[in-house]
Length: 287
Ligand code: AMP
Image: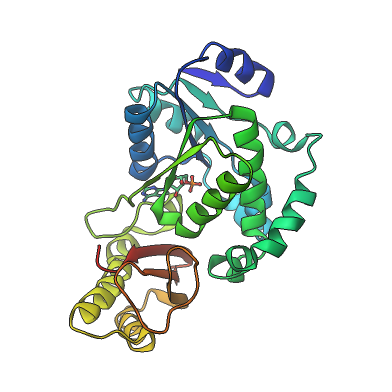
């Protein structure tokens, strides 16, 4: 595995991949089984695999969260040892954002044409988050010029943003969305899980259980969003470690519009503060 920190170095290696399918997995590091699954898929579907680790400052709503984000580069490199990744790209903030391309002007246009994706759902609670994600992906896609990009369904709204970015700017890139990898308890793997205590980790299964309660109520004929959400809230409120339910929403998976009546294929999205940690999850109804 080649380790690069600069675009210049990266380009030299990318040159040698000409004619081969390049799969790209962007990450913020602190690898868990979800990341490793994305990388495995990338290896299956492409001849060369580039993974990036970049804790992107522009997508954090507050500085403390950015500073607290787990950074475990040495362990991450160890985890990649047997993964057949070709390039691990770990650029500095300067390397990514010192560019002649003014992403801000592109972003302004997008924020107008994409109000729902930027400011609803996760965007309503993390102002500026998706603008930051958009900026970093714009830069990373321009630098790496991959054929296929791999993203987790765990960050569902992000996958819609990537679809949009591909449609408007990177038409030749193919997007592969990878299903969420979960612990036995049902909790989705997340770098933020490292902030949970061992008791918290066990009890966090309530998150998955709340999603399951929506699934079974729907299967039993309940179609009204309000009633389905109340079921999930009821499950969550029984667990003392749930400090706050930030949102539970049911949306159309293509338009991202909120649904009043639920159909198969709609997506349930949830964000909860649990033991001081913000956990997000989702599932598709009827899957
Ligand atoms: P992050 O390092 O959190 O930015 O995540 C990098 C990529 O891994 C994103 O495409 C995420 O959606 C994906 N990812 C995060 N958690 C999981 C998971 N539990 N299962 C599958 N993919 C995941």
